[in-house]
Image (cartoon, rainbow, N blue to C red; front, side, top):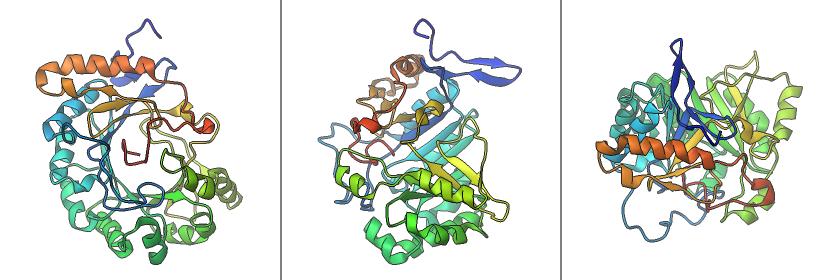
Length: 344
């Protein structure tokens, strides 16, 4: 692989067969683009002390024009899915315009957002009109008091109303992200299953991941998703095949349920073998892994449309430095201080 251009783009019989490829023959169709690291929630597993700027900033977050340019470059390299992340991405005043700018790339088939749901009820119809095609909402408990204890915000009913508004706006499925916490979400599996039985929700249990600022919580609250998997399989849930632009979740289906269960288990064996996503931070750095040691600067090539080819070359060449796996098993969290830092 070292002698090849990692960004070669080829079409065979109308189907994209080779796009961004790393040294381990993994193909990347999926970009997670952080547009801010600001968040108004204080989740215990991410920002328990609230948002704090990451050092001294010489410049702001990516502008709308910079977002247009970086997503155009990824689209021309074969990216088919872009997820807008944060922090809380809907805190951007130009969030609707950002969605429209990304969706303007004809190669981008899916424009998704991960949100805490704070502005969902009032904004989701406009987001969908702008081109949003997929939606993930964070809900860590179905008990309003526990929800407030985890997030630091008394917004449970507001978030639930937002999910209802998403269906009313025309989404046929909503994904719900739930961080798996010992003695919290793991002991309420039956409550979650009852919630999704009549609803087209994909409930995604995400294993708690260790971060630079979350070591103590990790030791106290981490529980393996394998325990949930065993309980699901005992009840007749079956794992479904993954699509090439799907995220890392193993998705389980049961014929008696309208909803689905997803399990994201970063500590599972060979988790990184199916990696298909890259990240760009809100400050314009390409991150090859959520738990990597650094980022590749792109912002100097986002100042004008004239640098598009150089931008594509830098992105593609960067993949030669992507490692085979993260090092979470060794307690190495890289530069990730918290999950809002480069978009979770």
